[in-house]
Length: 174
Image (cartoon, rainbow, N blue to C red; front, side):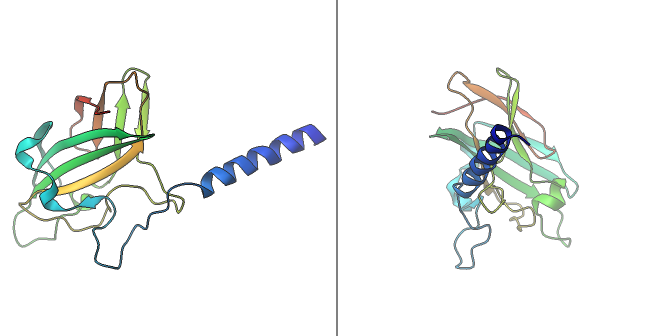
């Protein structure tokens, strides 16, 4: 390898390493009794004041799902979701995994044809709710997801939460 090529490779590796070390650092589990990352206080969202909502089927029963807000702050977009599982009594507690097999969420930018996925902290943990965290049955659960923010010219995006139906043209608060 020539000197210039080797220097370019070393510079690129250094930039990647430095970028990875300067990411957000939030614990995925808090042993102090604080609210787990991605799961907010269930009283924080009023299910009657959602931007959009629907009822969907899940592997455990019906689920009411709605979007409370999608707001950009700095270079990040924060999605707040209200999820109310209606699981018959006597079974397992509902979790995102048991309801739909995934915690994936995405912002679908139809202007620039991009898909924004949940960002990860420097430890590789997604800044969203836990896949196996127990959810309250027959009561609203507030879940938060953090993404890289779409550009300023994007006024609305489609929002996908797991395998639930996609919400179209959700306005972005800036």
